[in-house]
Image (cartoon, rainbow, N blue to C red; front, side, top):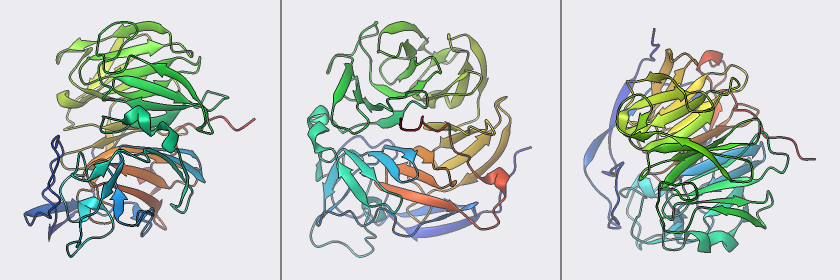
Length: 377
């Protein structure tokens, strides 16, 4: 039986953001009255984490990607930085979505400082500006991950707009591989069609959620060579409409967020359809807790965090929607450290958050860490 928590409804004057905003937005605050749906959760936000943006006169851009490599090394993929207007309107709380419309393609966005490393306190300790040219002419990177099975701890960055995937050395100094051809979208063995996410199998193979133009999962070997693909456009079993996330459990089952079909689909590692979990609205990201093998999904419109078991039984959920502490415009990717802190990337509000477990929180309502990456040699 689905467990719910007693919710409160808080109406506040905030931005009239659109989850699917694709056009540049005017740098003027909206005064539309919208409803913020927040329920008490097992977490409390760490106040001011990663805020304000350290460059005067700028704010974080759209935040699509965050990955915890270790408790003090958090990798972030950001769609540039947004130049702030002057004067700033009242109510600005150091992130774009506190007073303006969606940070996605916001007016004033400069595609710069797209890959950064934060420490546990939220301080930027590294900025890899040398890779900004990879995202020139695009809206920036999409998601960022490291395989838990890779002794080199290579960093995989999805570049949706150019239909490419980039593999960096762990220190960010070398571009080791580029998969796909820039600005060429094809449904074949060497190209992608706006890929969205990646996941990894113990043998080193890679699964690509490919993605918005294509409608397939692509399986590559550890060196990026094509092995196979499965899926077509549609709403039947094994068909997709906007693959947005992919994850793998310890039994090597593959979970795919079939976003516009509002469901999770489950396959074996070779693409054999196993099951589907309907009833979602806009699933964006999947995290599988390593110890318990719970499957956590960020669902949006409005933002909700949902817990399933591996059989698809919905165990628990809470709403966390809006530009208030602990809320989201669109929870695009999330990751967990060894202490149980949850790091969240908000694509719409342009905000990173760190959520820590509340004292005395019900352990069943906490997101356990995903499989940890291999320790440094």
